Image (cartoon, rainbow, N blue to C red; front, side, top):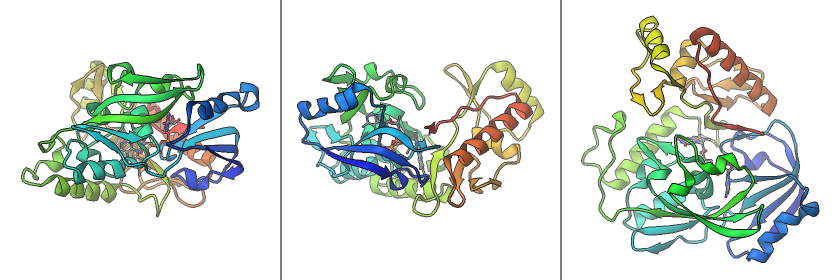
Length: 330
Ligand SMILES: Cc1cc2nc3c(=O)[nH]c(=O)nc-3n(C[C@H](O)[C@H](O)[C@H](O)COP(=O)(O)OP(=O)(O)OC[C@H]3O[C@@H](n4cnc5c(N)ncnc54)[C@H](O)[C@@H]3O)c2cc1C
């Protein structure tokens, strides 16, 4: 375990927002339970703590006056037992996806190139191109920072839903150390996403490549422009609201009834409200994808928040639909 005081978080969040943390503790794969227990007693247990992965879904609006706990990125090699693979929570998720394919294990190729770490993939139930982490998570091993012991959660315990797990309800309590994924030895491409339909003969590697290219065609590359990916969740509305909007906007993409209602495209609503390509202060709406807010030039977290608020208000006023941020605003 290593500790750093008064550290800049600019390199630790993909928006590239320049704030500081009072302290950062980096947990290593070999740290003992006794060492982990020291995290509970920082400043007599009164120190605010934030668990940070790759910072790819976070917007810092001010300096963090407490301790940021993060897992070392030094990738301990995943451990395989037949079709089960256990990976260190600090491993870059995309490195794990590549590792699984290199080792003849399939399923997660549709999650290629999602930024962030293995631990956060379970917290967020990351998803893309017709797949979600929940389809593969077998179990999650965590350290309970409140009660001070190691615990294991099954897939069912995690209560996964769209960009949700129960870990989101208790932020800062469970430090996820390892995640075990169940994969397949036989490759069966998941082409449920429309843009992938034409790839029935692609190998897993070719599908991964195609998905990576599709992704970076419409998202800002983190090394060029900071962002947190999709900033808002796709809102779910009831049948009455859907029917009203359907009648009013012939160009609105079809939504199919899913659990709880009709899931609309937040990107379409923001685009239709006229925000695509606009900037406000140092923050902007990505010209190729209205769902993405980005760092248009040394933006502050407050500028991102203020742009997000303006979009939420406008979409509410124009369509009567409430947009909820997917990004976590600190
Ligand atoms: C360009 C871009 C594209 C993206 N595309 C997608 C996409 O297609 N699909 C998608 O779902 N997401 C996408 N995202 C969002 C992001 O990649 C995911 O939310 C990712 O899981 C965040 O990982 P992270 O390690 O950066 O977590 P962070 O942003 O650091 O943290 C996210 C949450 O997880 C918690 N957390 C992190 N690590 C741990 C841990 N070890 N133990 C306990 N809690 C932890 C944090 O406290 C926080 O609540 C995108 C982001 C970017 C920048």
